[in-house]
Image (tube, rainbow, N blue to C red):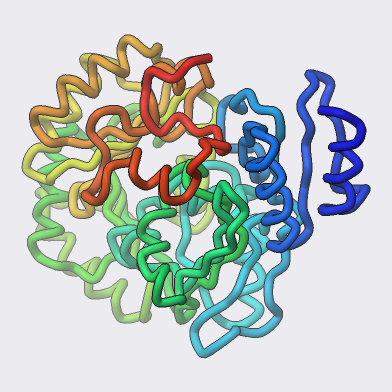
Length: 400
C-alpha cells in the first residue's frame, strides 16, 4: 500500500485511526458508519482484501488481508433508549459495558455468548454465537430490532428499510463475509427479579433424559444446559437449570424439579452460580477450536457420541430443548471435515465458529451444509460483496 493510499485512508477515517502493521498490512479503526463506508468503497475500488475485527478476543487467528478493519472506535452506547424497549449500540461496544449500561436504565440485554466479557456486540452478532439463554429469549435475531451494515462495496444498508428487511437474518452468523455490522438496535428486556440455578451431576444419559423431561413439562426456565466435566470443572457431567424472571418462578421450578430425574437437585450459592455460567463461557477461549451443531433433542445422545468419537470430550455443552451443541478443543481440518461429513446425511449442521486460519481456510465456517435455509452463499456474496473484498472462510477449500 503506497503512502498516497495511506494518506487517502487518513482523510477518510482520521489520522489517528490508521496505522501500518509490522507484517505489512494496514489497520484502520473508522470512527463512524460513514467512515466505514468510505474505507470499504476505497477497498472495493482498489481491489484490497479486508478482514473485519472487533476486540480480537474470540477468533483464534486473523485472516491474511491487505486491510484490517477494526470496529473498536464504533463503541458508543445511547444514554437513553431510541424508542420504548430498544437501545442503540455501536458494533465495537464491549458486551460487558453494554450490560452495565442497560442495568443503569433498569433493563437487561440477554446476550450470553461464549468468550470473554469484552467481546464486542458486532462480533457476537456477526459470528452468531448465542449462549444458553437462547432457550428462554430466542436466538440472536429475536434480540435485534435493527441493524446498520456496510457492504463490501461501501453501501450503507439498514434493516428497517423496506428493500432491506431481510438484512438481520442474512447478516447474523455470516462471520463478516457479507458486510460490516456497524450499529445495532437491541431489544431491552425487563430486569429479572431472581437469578437462580439448580444443578445435578451424574451419568450423561440420565442427565439428557432429565433435560428432555424438563422441556416436555414446559417449566418457566431460561436455560437448561448440559456441561462436560472439563467445562463444569467437576468430576462428572453436570446439568444446570437457570431461572431468570419473577420471584415466584424460582419456587415453581424448585417444586417441579424434585420430581424430575429421580431428584438430587441442589441450588447453587450465588458465587458458585456465577463461576459456572461465566467460567463455562470464558473457558472455551483457552483452546483454539470451537464449533456448534444444530441437533434435535431425540438425537442428542447419539450426536454427542459421534462428536466424542471423532474429536474427544473436550469442552462440550448442549441445550437439548433449544437444539444446540457446542464443542471446544483441539482438532485439525481432517477430523473436522470427517465429522461434518458424518453429520450431513443426518441433516445436522456444523458451523465452525473459531479456528486457526489454516483450518478455517480448509474447512470453512459452513462447508457444504449450512445452518438454516435461504439463498446459496455465492448468490449472497454477489449481492453484498460482488468483488470479494471481505475475507471470510464461509466455505472450505479457499486458497491461502
